[in-house]
Amino acid sequence: MRWEQWLRKIVSLTGKTVLVTGANSGIGYAAASHFLTLGADLILACRSEERGNAAATRLREQFPHRKIELLQLDLSAKSSIDNFAKKIEKRGAKIDILLSCAGVYYPRETKTADGLPMTVGVNYVGTVWLVEALLPMLKENGRVVLTTSLVDRFGKVQKHPRSKAKEGYADYAESKLLLSAYVLKKAAERRPNEPLFLAAHPGITATSLLDPAKTSHNPIFSKLGHAFLYVFTHSKEKAALTAVFAAAGKVKNGDCIGPRGPFGISGFPHITKFCRHARRQAREGTDPYRAI
Image (cartoon, rainbow, N blue to C red):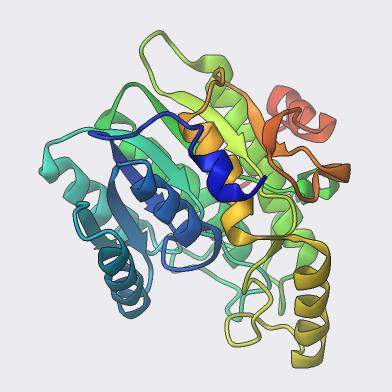
C-alpha cells in the first residue's frame, strides 16, 4: 500500500485549523501537505520567512482553494514565542490541532537568545513554552502532537547543564527524552475538555536533517549519512503519517504513535509505547531547564 492510499482512510479535516511548526521542510512540510489534502485550513510557523514563503507558495500552488497562513516563529527566542502567541490570540478563532515539528540537530550555534543550550533550548524548552502559551487558544478536546524520536531511550538529563563548544547526538537524545516525558506528564494532568496530548515519532527518515549547511556536521559524514537514509529508511511523506494519525486518527490521550516496521524505523503508523526512560523521567525526573 502506498502512503497516498493510507491517507485516504483518515477522517476529513474540513473546517478544522491546523498549526504546524517547522513546516517549511522535511516532515513538517509533508505533514502540512497531508493536512491540506484532508481539507484543513493551515497555519505555517517557520523561523525563516524566506523559506516559509517558499513553502507557502508551493503549497498554495498545489492547494489553490485552501486557506494557508504563514507566521514567523523562532523557538530559540522566548520573545519570538510570546509575539507569535499574541498573533494567534488576535486571530480570534481557536486552533483544532497543534503539531510541533520544528527542531535542531548538531546546530552551528550552541546558545539560544535566552542563554540556554541550543538543542535542548529549541527542541524541548522552546517547544514547551510555545505549547503552554497556545493552550488557551486551542479548542476543547483538540490535539497537541509533539514530534519525539526513537533516540529518547538513549537520552540522559544533565543535572547541571553547562555550555559546550559543540552540541551533538547526546544533546538531541536528551531533548527528545524530556519532550516525551512532557507529553506523558501533560496527558496525566489533563482535565475533561482540555486538548489531548500525544507524541509521534517518525522512525528514521530521509530528510535534510544532516545537511552541513544547517548543522555542524562534517560534509563527508553528511553525505554518507544521507546515502544511508535514502537507502534504508522511508520518505518524509510516509514518515509524516505518524503525525497525521496522532492528529486525526483513532487515538487516546497520552498515546505515542510510531511506524509499525522492525525496530520502529519505518512503516505505516500504529499506537506504540513510550520507552521506559521517558516513563521514569515523567514520573520521577526533575527539569533542570525549568521549561514548565
